[in-house]
Length: 254
Image (tube, rainbow, N blue to C red; front, side, top):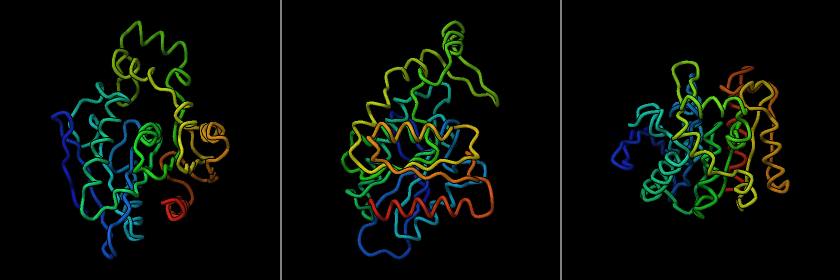
């Protein structure tokens, strides 16, 4: 594991690079994008760390990082936007693709929850990205899943406050979110898309994956695990099952 500090707009982006110990030539790159309020560990049980270690053993260079405003990166969470996270991902891919160990024409993006939403928009504009994998990704636009009451409250107060001290600003996150249309992005996507969802997920419903698959004209592949929760918990072995499905997609598409 190699900790890295990247710079975007004068602020630090913290990440950790996992390289395969035994490799012949350059390794394909896998970038892990965490979800809302998440970090480079992925979830409280450090699933991203486990996944990165396993994928590196299979020959992939894996980078997990904190979007600015999260984890060990600079920035303030309340100032984070979809646009700022896309900018961070562009910086990450740009820097990692130049590494001598990396095959810059074989890049995969894996996003958890909101991270899949960010990865989707980036994947439509960088032809070096060859596949996109969603771990319980939320693809609905903010205006579609936020209630009218929420939006009216946010506009009136200027912010929305959530549990555990998280606040999103109307003039930053919410207004910025209104610029994005995931349905158009899904229809524009030309690369393979793998959708993994869990019946035990009480945060992002399986319908998010089903709607995303429909927007791709049915070309995306969807897998549903009965015991999988949003935090990658469940019956013993659920994490290994998640990683195995991911590896299967990467082997076919990358």
